[in-house]
Image (tube, rainbow, N blue to C red; front, side, top):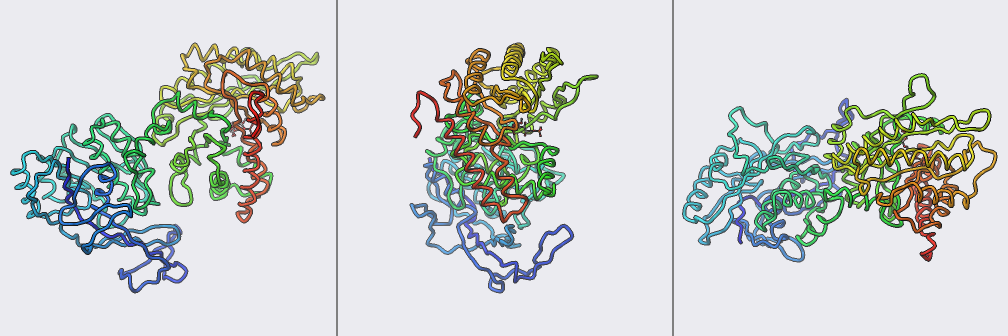
Length: 630
Ligand code: 5MM
C-alpha cells in the first residue's frame, strides 16, 4: 500500500512575544490585541521555534502507522529524529504566543499546490488539508486518476470555497469534511480559517464522508467525541490533520469505522507537538478503559487497588460556605484556582483513579487551555460528575429526598460527550431519636423513596454508558450510637440493593459510596477505630452483594486524620469481596484549603498538604492483613 499526499509542506514558526514590551491594546473584555502588519524581524520575541506543518503532518502520521507515503513535490522524510527535508520550505506560518494565548497567522495568499503526475501507480492519492489546488492541478490529478485506475482518491474539504477541489468530490472514494459545531470557541484567525458553507453547498455522499468538528469525528450514526482545540499542539489545525490522516491510515490498515475514529481521537488527544503516536502505542491506548466504552471496566478501574477517588464536586452553595469561613471571595477565578491546586498536584495520578467534578469545573479549562476533562484523562485519571441537584424536604417533614431526575438523561448524554465516564448522586439520611432513644428517622418511607430515586438514577447512567456511584450518606453530625448507625446502614443497604435489582442495574458497573459505621458526632461515646473497622466490615459483608464493582467511603466531616485512621481500620478487616477505598472530599481537601486561604502564593504549600493526605490514605489502604505494608 502506498499513498501519495498532495499538499503543502510548511514551516510553523512559533514566536513568543514579550507582552511587556510589545504594543498590546486591551479591549473591554480584557483581551489583548496586537496591531501589526506582520514582519517577524521587527518584533521582539524571546523564543523562536519551528517545526514542519501542513502536509508534513499527514506524512508523519501515516509513517507512524507503518504506511508508505510520499508528499508530492517534496523530499520530506521521517527518521528517528523526526521529520527532515533537504529542499527548502516555501511557505511559513507564524504563531504568535503571548500571555499564554496563541494567535495563528498564515499568508493571505496561498501557495498553490503543484502536482507532477508520478510514473508510479499509487494506491491512494490524498489531497490533504494543507492543499490549495487550482484548475491546473485539479486537471492533472484527474488525468492521473484516469491513467492509474487502481488509485483511490481521498480529499479533505475545509469548506466548499475552492471550486477545483469541489469538482473532485464525485471522484472521491473518501471525503473528510469540516462542519461547525456547538462550541465554536477558540477559532483561529488564519487565512486557513473555516468559512461558512455557501448556499450552494454540494451534498456529500454520507457513505463516503467523515465529518469533523471541533469536538467530534462522525460517520453517519457513529460519533467519536474529541477536543480538537489542543492549544498545546499550538495550532488546532494540526489536530485536524492528525485526525484525518489517522482515519485514512486506519481504514487502509483494515480497522472498522468505530475503531478508526477511536484511534484518531486518541492520536489527537495524546500527541505532543511534532510527535504523533505510533500505531503500537495507539493500539495500547485504545485498550485503556477510559478510551473504551465498557462501563464494567471503567468501574473496576475507578476502584483499582491502592488508589482512591477524589470528590471535588462541591456544589456552588457548598463551595461558597467553605470559602466564606476563610473570607475567600466566591469568584470564578478563586474557584478555578482552588480546584487547580488539586489537579496540578505532582503525582496525583499515583494516588487517584478518578475525580468527581461539579458542572462548573467539568466545563472549565486548565491554565494551558486544555479542558479539565481532557487534562485528567491524559493523566489517566477518570473524570466523573456529580449529577444530583441537591436535597429537598418531603412535604411536612424534616426528611429529604434528592432532586435531579428531571432532564437527567439529556444531561448524562452531554456529560458523556464531554468525556465524563462516571457520575455521583447523594442521598442524605439523618438519624434522629425520640425521647426514649428510639430511632425516629430515617423512616421507611424516606429510605424507600431515596433508594428508588438512586436506582432510577443508576439505571439512567448505565443507559448513557456512565458508571453510577450511588451515595446514601448517613449524616455524621447527629446524636446516635454506633449500633443505631449499624442498624440504619443495614436498612438502607437492604432497600437500596432491592431497588437496584428492581431497576435492573448492573452491579458490576456500579459503585457504592457510603459512610463508615460510627456513632454520631454529638454522641457522648466516640467510636474507636477498632469498633468502626469491625462494624463497618460486618455491615458491608452482610448487606452488600458480592458482585458490586466496589465500595468507597465518604469522610462526612470526620477530621482528615480520623478519616484516614478509620479507613485503615476498615481495611484491616479485609480482604473483602469487593475493592474498598476512599472517596473523600473534606478529609482530602480541607488541609489544602486552609493552607491556600485564597492566596495563590500559598499554592505550593496547599499542594503539599493535599499530597500528605493522599499519601496517608493510600498507605491506609495497604493495611490489609493479607498484605505486608511496603
Ligand atoms: C458527603 O459528601 C460527599 C463526600 O464528601 P466528604 O468526604 O467531605 O463527606 C461529597 O462528594 C459531596 O457529595 C459533594 O461534596 C457535594 O456536596 P453538596 O453538598 O455540594 O451537594
